Length: 230
Image (cartoon, rainbow, N blue to C red; front, side, top):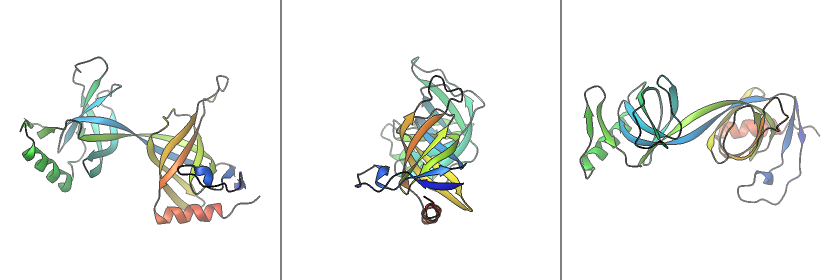
């Protein structure tokens, strides 16, 4: 596997990864993408959450994501335990039990919110402990995973192909092994090209912008791109 230059530098534009020299990957370089879909939290407790979704999450479904309450965020895992009936046909509810209780930091923030809630209407359930209505103040970013094949790379972004349909504008995380080094970057999906009708593989071409990466991943990427051969 080697790299081939795709373009020369152009005048930088905010949010345009073409401001960076792009390199085509000649050969096979696979990775994975974790994309987050924000779901509204209706109520929340230390050991569970009630989610509102556009599509049903069936009982028994394992879920993993990032819970965000105000300025706090925390990775959570759990399982859908029940599907309460929704008030309208356009929404679905999913009751999720966490595999582990929330952290002390998040718990303290929730208890403070419970005490200062004007209505004082925190719900209590012997099976789950107290729960509070969130009123749009909390979101769970549900994670979806896809295997990808990287097609080109730059210091500002990547283009990859996958058989999984993803949505432009979603944020997530790209992981790959660049030679002997690991690489992880926070990304935003910017451009989606759907498969052609006559494409039996059903492959999507997706352009992603790198939002951030740690120093180690930045060094891995720079070292990998430095091996370019024209």
